[in-house]
Amino acid sequence: MQVNSIAMLDQLISSFKSTKVLVVGDVMIDAYLMGRVERISPEAPVPIMDVKERDYRLGGAANVAANLKVLGAEPILCSVIGKDPKGKIFMDQLSKVGMISEGIVQSDERITTIKYRIIGNQTQMIRIDEEDQHDLSAKENEQFLNAFFALIDRYQIDAIIFEDYDKGLLNPHNIAQIVQKAKEKGILVTTDPKKKNFHAYAGVDLFKPNLKELCDALHLNREQLTIEQLHDAAKQFAHLYEIDMVMVTLSDKGIALYHRINDHFELSPASAREVSDVSGAGDTVIAVSTLCMVEQLPTTQMLKVANLAGGIVCQFVGVVPVDPILLQEQIMELVEQNTKS
Image 1 (cartoon, one colour):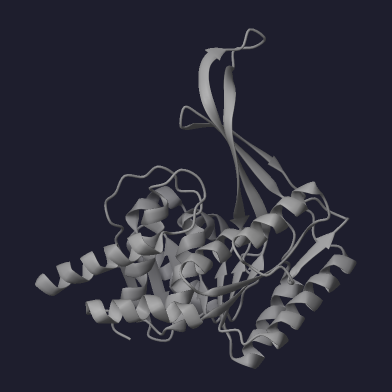
Image 2: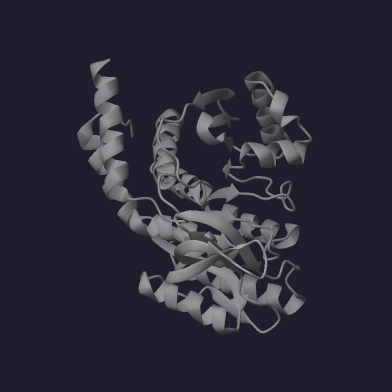
């Protein structure tokens, strides 16, 4: 499918509605306490915030699923959370957005991850995390894999997204089992990695680190890295681990991608826009890229669509899924500009 007309854009967005995506990874709650700061505490030189509003949002792998959901796809989450009050909040949030919870294992051996963002006068003042980062126990790992295998056998899955936040859910052994099962069924696999399991995703179709993650894992100097060196690093990594595509998000510089089969490297610059908060942009990029890959979009068009989607969420405060109406409008504007040039 070539994105070169308004009609095809409409076809692209609507085609997402028939896509089932299994999202495997660390889930969490993004909590926001928002209010006004008008004085300093007499107890210590810190601001006092009057809380006016509390908000709970799906975070981590659940934010990837939320992005898929608003774009019309059918996300199915598979993860492990705590059997605790925060776990109930998480399950309630899933229910509110109409997502099934049968792939969520609740364990009494760990707590549900929650990140509190304290926002006073529209400025984030501090973040407070409550979480366990230890690996799954043998029992939890078995329950998690059983949930995964049940889901992949029950549903006609088009793609699997690994969303790894280094919170202990994923490890080289269960990653390998999941990738093997996906290959047996011919299911597309994409990955948003973190440091601990960075080298554990051999054989996936798309591997999407950000530039810092890539440089840290490969011991590259991020400040002095040239585009040519980025190309070489992505190429070597793709061939070493037999990964079809390595996509590297470059913040305000855009997205770079190396395609192993075609031995092709390209850079898609980001659109200039006002940035309020980069939280969750990577979640949006992996969600949109995966949907575009299911639709067999050419890589150049996929990068442009993913760039626009990631940029849209950066315009809003906090972790939010992409607005599909804004995304469609901006893709149309881009296509019209290309048509005139």
